[in-house]
Image: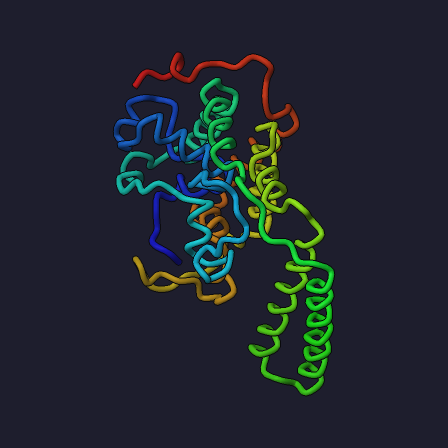
Length: 283
């Protein structure tokens, strides 16, 4: 697994929840300001730490969306080295406090203002080049040839790696063709990442957490230590940062967080009246 950060923070930050409790003394001990904490919540809810104009034509890092570099642009956990010494006993209680903090922030004037500003900053300024009919026809022809080639590879029992590479290429080709059906793909992605109603963004992230947590094997065995700590099961080592964060937090914490999120979704994400976090917490 990647370098281990605070166990409790890991789970909370999976989707929305960051590492801080409701008392100023704890926040100060952790060395996190409310401003920094709230920025992490906002950015993990959106899934974007940059807020740059959306442009799908810009290649991120050449490694694909599942690469570590790409994941870190959407999800981050603050480094809190002293967390274990601060939170030692009531993990479940601390987890619930953290959830409450996030819920308060989401229902605050500060969150609405920060979300609106981030959404505007990420608004696309252009749209990518659109292929003409001949170009799209060429893509479809190429896709058919790739699919025929894949069938032959499987029939010939080619190595699994080669088959997977071809399948990945086909998936990418299909995605490229589908994108040509949308005249404004940048705007479409922007609205998905930054829906006009911020409650929709929060709800999507909470539901994402529940889906991820449901797949985590809390009995998974690891070997090694520190930077060299890895899962014995290689399939788990390939899991996302979010999945690993849930695992590190442990079943006890996730049970609390899951129950809290289910109740929150049942009640509704946002209330009508917005509070001021500055009135609740004094730095």
